[in-house]
Image 1 (cartoon, rainbow, N blue to C red):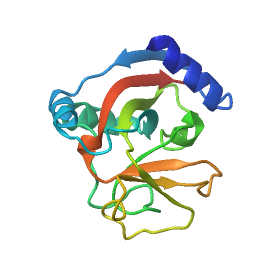
Image 2: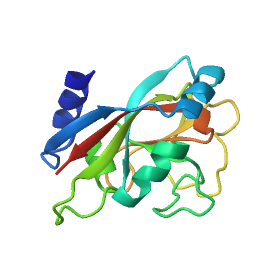
Image 3: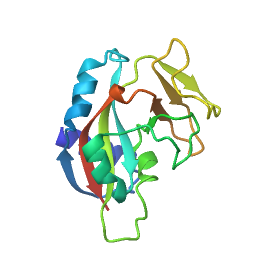
Image 4: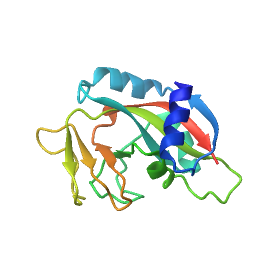
Length: 163
């Protein structure tokens, strides 16, 4: 698993991330919710989720949550956002100008049948009818993003520390 993460970050970071370390992560109640949730399990992928250092403790204790107020925008509404390109998630990890490492999670995400959307839909609170998730095709950054609206559709597997 370590080598897969190293390879995936190297292929998708555009040279923006020099990995310091990778830790295997299990948030017990999150993992239990994942095991009990059948939604989207017919299509599971490993994706990245970037975060700022001050959020780490809360995420390790509570898992990823759907915030009541979006701190980084909400192009596709209130959900948990992921990327298949690590450079997309790096945008949410804070400044590279500090000596502290930046952090990014790797999670298994049950996308199931994603609804592909190219335009904004900031009022979403769930995937459109008949779909399990949203696939935001080429967002403002030119990269895709993936959104789930049920936190039990993901489980954190690893934490990547990088420069």
